[in-house]
Image (cartoon, rainbow over all chains, first blue to last red; front, side):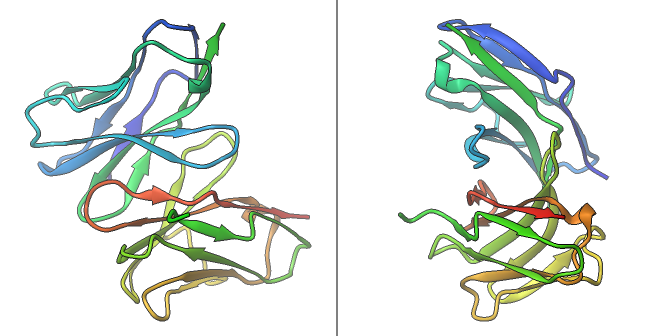
Length: 113
Length: 112
């Protein structure tokens, strides 16, 4: 069975600073994908970034970057220059096989002015 | 708006009643997924359609749950004889391939 672990239930970050959200995963498959989603209080899941298991470079999307360490089975999300609008729940997820995602328990990020 | 839409956004029902939710995926996406999210947890996979074919159902889906995607476009999720444990956010997502799944706003179900 695939498992995603997010050990930080909540984090505070000062506006304009960077924050790293931890994610470790467990799978015996060689081909898989790793995702990060943002869920604001409105409830909608917003896709942020994707990393394939065979991708050699770390994924980046604007202020989001994924620190992929395959040997350690970690896929940490780095948010640079935090903004107040970044306050939300963040979920790490893994796709093994063709379709379904397995999600972690999430990390709540609160950005302070 | 070309995103995934879900209807209704909120549903309050009494225990024992039947409810039906609708999901309209992004029009060119052939894959559609249903997830359930309880408070403080990540979403859990319920079922998956490729076009009109339902290819997998999670063990979370008891016999009271049924999902359809009759023409490979919109999908419905029905819960019969609702129980208080069914209270959750029901999320629909769609994708055109193996990568990102785009989620709708969800339907929040409260069973009294």
